Image 1 (cartoon, one colour):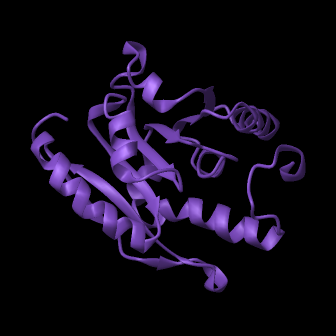
Image 2 (tube, one colour; image 1 turned 135 degrees about the vertical axis):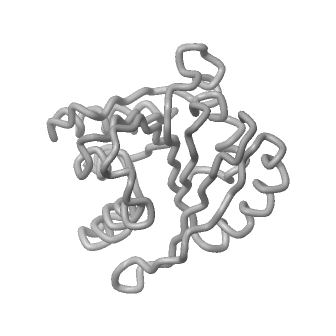
Length: 191
């Protein structure tokens, strides 16, 4: 499928399992409560379906909406979800910034994820209305990007009652890279 759709630069089977699947599943290691709760999740910039396809497969209680502005990517994820029989995964072709302005999308999600999409502030600004008042963002990052984003996010969003934190760093198998989650906690005021 990758050669037909040009979805990812990672083309080896080993790279696929490590850099896409293992990376996508790491969220359950650091946030195990997510796997046990029926929550609505938006995966922003879902690309080839990571983490949305993996999370929908592994955690049927999650109700996931995969969002991507590139038609061929959202079409691929929709096709894959259908072929895998994933009833808990919906796909939307669109831009988060535009969906964020639409009343029917506001307050809809308990969790917003994004993996290798944009700086945290961009994700926040383009999705802040989509998250419900008790929701949070969990962003997949490299440690360098996570640290850079952490200071910016805490400086800019504390006034909205959000505090941002970092998970411990973790290594992907076979020395395939180090990752870290940047995540929000609601500490009072609505955002």
